[in-house]
Image (cartoon, rainbow over all chains, first blue to last red; front, top):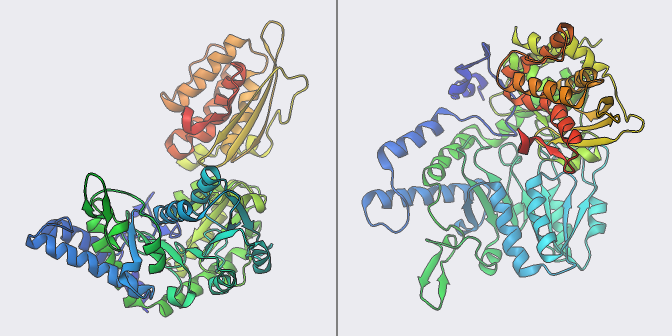
Length: 406
Length: 156
């Protein structure tokens, strides 16, 4: 793959930040958008806009078809069996809330256990916490080891006859650890426990095949996959979507409405009430095409190369400490610099046009475990080059100079 | 350069070696502050004497150079002031950070004013303003004997 050609598809990189070329190392937070995605959104609003669903007119029919085309693309992209297993939500967070709420209503009683891990983003903890509050469920945390990998044996030990669901990330947004989901699903399924996977960080960067993983639920967001904001994706096995109650009530999710009874719509509409982010869902198809035009193998090879280069260079800088050393690491690099708080690092780097993130990255449980309140994080996307890493390291040196570190 | 204005030597120095760190003996007032955006925490301890003069003022904190320096400078300047004088200095500081660039206080000498004004560079960095104001809001809370933790999401 030709990285310069790919980078040139992202118009934002012609912009200057504080007079410097943009070095964007915050893709774990959200990715930048290629021209094909920006154009599609614009074109749809300019020439094709209509709401989807009930209307008979040509624009509505066309928009509805395009909307469903994205569903099929997503299904193929993650290798789901049926297109009805793909539900669009407003973001991945809502997708997890959808599962936690509906699954909880139906399956969680007082004293039932939910297993999550110490790696989880707050969005894969707080929705389960609601069940702790409302249904008196118990949340257990599968621990991580000092490398930042989940201790699978410990997770296994946590599963009891009271365990109702396991919710786990596929890729840590702090340490970059790639979690062995297939193994975890096998362990959980042996005890008839379903598994929800938070795929926000994995779908943009590694191969995801939900049929092979055999997980029950898989969620991710479009905006991290070079797509628009406002779209989350819930994959769930059909048996679950048929069995669970609906989540949000309103138009489109009903089949028949009477004064004394309401019949809900079939899948996937049962879970897509109200006007959807029509333009964004339709646009997301372009992001998938963009990803497919590169190919996951090429993309993974490129990101691995940049990640390894970054790790090697960062390790050479005095007082820089990389957080976690997982067995399989993707392009998410959290680090600290002894003597400089991450927020100071982020502010100083920004002056050099280098965009990173600083804070707890919505993972306070993990930071507490690591005995840190905050870290700096550089995360890699398809458009990053070795030059970006050089710029990062140069900006870190500047940071060290300002703080007079030896 | 703007960055130099933010990270002036005096700020870096106070950030590295904050003054009046720890719990002061016999404190009569205390308050905690928290910035949920970045996780910065501060705990202010204050001893008012019988005439409500700030006899001792110390803090414990976890945070960036700006927040540590700001808390450190605050303790230096407010210590020894009367209750009313302290309030005036705090308001002058918050006004400088949020509104004007000038520091208008009748209770600080020129040298002290220069010290506080070293923090005015933070204005250019909106995401960092709360780092500078956290300790000061927390001091107000301690003086007014408010029970609830100061939360910058609520107060600023």
